[in-house]
Length: 278
View 1 (cartoon, rainbow, N blue to C red):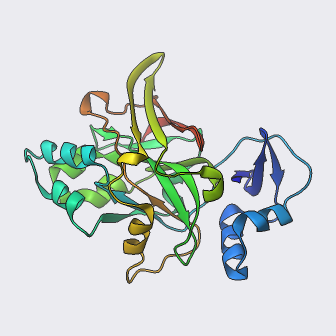
View 2: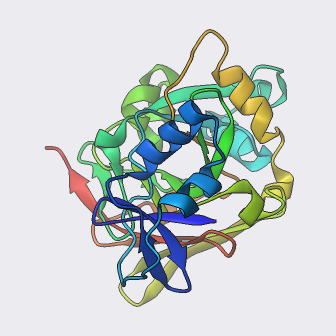
């Protein structure tokens, strides 16, 4: 099943149209299914209208929390160590260590949906998209869906000092999610997804890259298990699973750029970039 939000209301995607689930948001539906011990898809079908309507998908879920994982693909660790002038530094260590890197990305306040602007910090000269597959989990840590995520990051700020990571990662418009939430049974094999990222500047393609989730070093459930250690999270939390697509400084985002992230099984997430703050 593919779940969307249309005018703030949960809906089932149905052949390019939508069956609304009146009085529910996707986050509320996830929480309701968990409390009732129900399957999310079954509950959505039971509550959905039989009529279909046109609509444009908004952010598929307003997450109470967003967490993100780093160095889950080899190119990510290698690039960051190279940026610091080290062949195998702290990022390579984290890539190989049993404990994964997991950091707090923010709340719904910093998240945007399809077509909404992502942020370039006014004090950053090298902000880049990080295209990722996002897991949506309930309060027990069960993966109830997948979506696309853009962990927009001010890499030059993190490069200056790793302790600046929160400032590199958390600010207005730093996280894009969409276009829909796809349930695990609908998605198929989550380790056989082809993720692509394109940056367009006007009519010019500034950057294009791709990676398969087959190259993900850690399993999704492994990341969730570490997230939940001494750290219970609320239903509808989003967990971004890391990027294997590296955007270099010559393709740093500028105002007006369009970032397009695609996975055929999930859809297309497109966002323009703007300067925030200052």
